[in-house]
Amino acid sequence: MEQYGAMREVMREGKTEARVTVCDVASDASRFGVGALEGLGGEVTIDAGEVWVSRVDAGKPVTTGPRCMPADRATLLSVGSIDHPVASTIDVALTNESLEDAIARAGVAGGAGRGPFMFAIDATATAMRAHVIAGSCAHADPDAEALRLSIDSPLVVRVIGLYAEGAPGILTHHGSNVHMHAILTFEGERVTAHVDSISLAAGARLTLPGAGNPRPAEAR
Image (cartoon, rainbow, N blue to C red; front, side, top):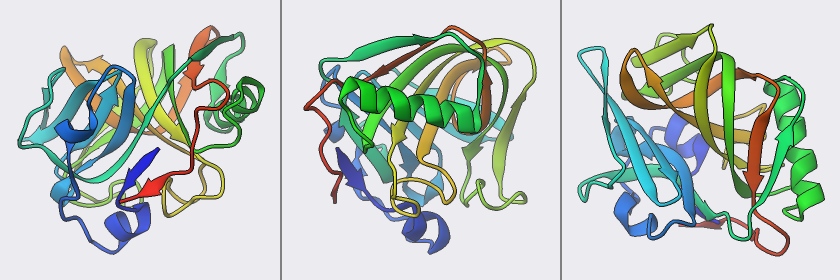
């Protein structure tokens, strides 16, 4: 794992300067990541080496990908590999805490332990609240400038996330062990967005690293 920036200093303390060029860390198909652009100017999701970046322009999402843009730099980015992947199907519907619990159990059973590690989920979301950041912390401030997505009917999503216990304010928001982004088609447009809450139908496919792969996050 590599960590650029910390959640508290970026989101709460306003230290939103560029820390890494996204292309430099999305080096191959084993790389996964979640984060935010410098200046909190958009969401960054790395999915098996593909780079999806969503910004807000005149209240609409503007997304680039799957190729990374050389000018895109992140102020906050968690990056890791899913080597020797372990995949499992979750046969029950999940929401928020139960999803975190399922990821935790799979991590222990598959050898990834209690994190930090990256994971991917292919699923049908039955409900989701998400946002594309636009200059300030939309997770904590309901009045922050952001594009907010509200989904209440079934929609196929790809979720890329970080699981880490005991790292609130550094790798995750307070009160959560996960930092998750969704990749989806919303109102006809490809979007990647930060997941605030999500409900998944039974049958979600969870993939995470196998034994011996996770390493402590290395701050940059």
